[in-house]
Image (cartoon, rainbow, N blue to C red; front, side, top):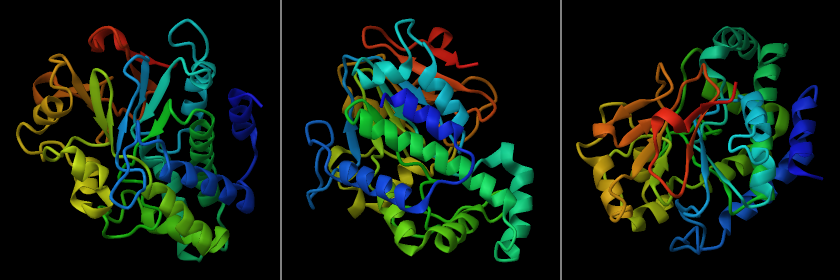
Length: 328
């Protein structure tokens, strides 16, 4: 079945996904992620795919900001004709475009603020009633199901980076921190999944999250979920499982918290022959289409109120004036 038809079916589903089928999808995706070809995903010292992914420098790249359960945004993007030559999902499946997501699949955040408050009341009664939490999890599961289907359909051309919200265990450690904002979102999701999908599902999904790459190297850009806290070389990024501070430093860094010169240092290290290269990230919201940091070298693109993406063309420098596109 064509990828876009698969995504249409996911979007049209009324209700939560069936446990066993979803677990099988997570297991298949995990197997792929842990054993990607080292030519573009170098192996760590344990023989697993590391935290660094090299993108195809000859392909246009669509950079997707923090998604936070916005499956409708993702679905619309896959159907969009950004380059006037076919829908993104079709071009992705044909190997004519690549898509890079900056992470944060779960948790609706600001747009779901009132629902989170209702879901907290449900959590407090051990989910005896769970209408709000069911709706929240339906959106998160649908988004990540679409992500996994895209990865399986186009493993070389589709990549989803780990964000700080890729922490279904709500754990402290291994580069992760527990999460809460409008309620106890991290713990509520962990408890929901444990209760209704089971411990094996919970821990398999956590392994999937920890198999995601941290840093993408394109022909004219770098990208990670958050601004790099400092300069990280290939060895520590590839061996991210041995360096939790690298995971933290590429997923949790707040605005103004990075070492001075970290962005410039990363660009000089990974793309020394591309003086106009830029670094993309999300993590903290921006009020417009983007925010420039690090002297214009860091492009922050996370606006939760917009369905916006960045498109990087291989033959010319990125231009925020023309290359930031709203899907609607």
